[in-house]
Length: 200
Length: 362
Image (cartoon, rainbow over the protein chains, first blue to last red):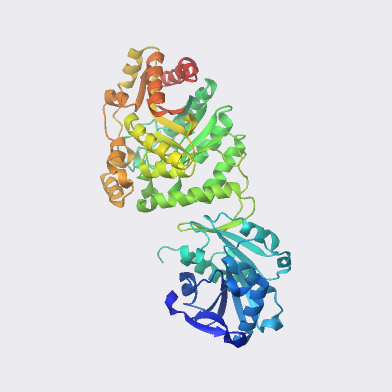
């Protein structure tokens, strides 16, 4: 599975909202910023899950407006449940989407992974009821991750070594691995399941 | 200029000093206890006679040192040495668990009331065999572990770590270092790669068992890299390690040191290990100079090259002055050159009373 495996489709009002899709099984919805495209991390996640990537653009409006439009597109896709990723400028929109009433998007949201947040988090995010994992690159000079973590009531924070803001491109294996762990196990991801056995 | 005493806790029983790994058949518990007691006596003596630091290090499977875990030694010294700083130079970072290193160093800093000096080392290459770590990954493991340790000391809220070599789901160390934001940091600066890394990360450097000419060249490179990174190292940022022995007269000191066997580096004591490490690319771009550092040399050559400092107080001061002038080193890490009982204690006393006060004015 590679980035080029993703197929571009359109959804939402008037089929105007583009998104990329690959993989099968339970769904992950990823919101990426700055007109981004699927990364190697998305491709790795798509090896075991269905991954739908929405890219925010300059036309997307505020994060709240973007979340509303993406929520409508997700509702049109008829998903029953999905896990949520927000990356870069897509972080705030992902949190607004996570706060949206289930009736609006027609699907239950599992847990949330936020990679390389930026800007100031909205006070409304204090109401987040889902577990959130915030990831920040060690080369990312921003302290936004810390501010998000202080606000979100059930938040885990991890540094991604040797990454800046484009974690999905710079450390794709690490991002995909930990996102999968967190989506599957939520808070239990704290306890490793990896075998330390060298030879049986 | 400051001085540190480095006692390797050499095994004082009858055992070969040119085999690695050394068989336990040579081991005597009584001799080992005597060796550790002697080590503690020498550190106490250094503390009493004004040495600024005492140094411990990590070496495995050898009579050269009974300190495979310098943290244990430093923990003991935190209660024995009452005034001097305790320099752990250092843990062999790439073969250890970095969170454990951060925790143990923070413990030592706490137990000593904020007297820890933290050296982060790649170690002698044979140590990679000890815990079965690939020496080819040494530099990358070192860099990541060092960044992680700094984070563990500085971050006050729990955090996870997704590294290339290390992964932790949550870290929040207790105790934390007394010195804020963290204890002074040093690393080896002998290779160009290490010098550049230290300069980029504003870390002090140390030169161990090298020569003054090789250290001088490495020092110039470190300074250039530091300037590029926007800072200027001070003498306090540079440690130079050499064997030493002081006696009342030059004649006595040279006579004492004439019993010293030529030093054979730990890695060169095992041909397979030496060759395997060389093939792994451990030494980096400057392999020839790195191998020259530990070449076998006679005592006279070692003195001329600044590997050994020996003589009466005036002669020793002149040798120290040369190191200061050529390298700009501000800390001299003095390794006990020969285990000669009372004469070794006298050497430490002479250095502390007759050399160190004049050295401080250099």
